[in-house]
View 1 (cartoon, one colour):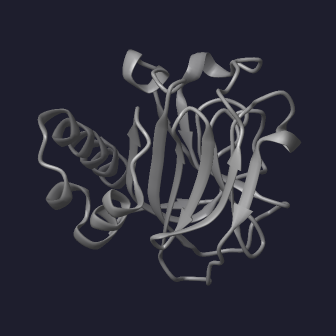
View 2 (cartoon, rainbow, N blue to C red):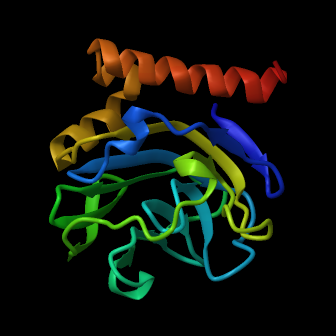
Length: 193
């Protein structure tokens, strides 16, 4: 099901202690179904701060990064996507290596160390489908099962989530709250409440 974004709308998840706890490791994951080609070289699917960390979609591939010096030294690209088709995308970092997964397979990795905080846009809130700098880098399509973890999940865990879905794959209390949050965001976006 998911939430459809028209290329002009976005969702903001306010910063919190849990979303700010990513320096020693993290996983960002989501399902994406593009309905239009990206408006630029890449558009945001999820982004905490300017490239710190994020998952983007390019003309034919996916892109992940966080800041470690300049953006060109901490970006990875890979995988492919098809118009109007779902892709499962995850970006993990274990404190040393950034790994991009598409449809359950690692498609790119890079040893980068820990991220820095040279860019702090909107106090660390997480935005879905829009660049925090300005409109025009917006995703037109559907997102579902967006999740953020403060640890790097392994390929087996990612494949379990991909195959079973968040709610069935994860039954620990904090994660249940995470899926409830996604359910609340979806309800608000769909019903306008």
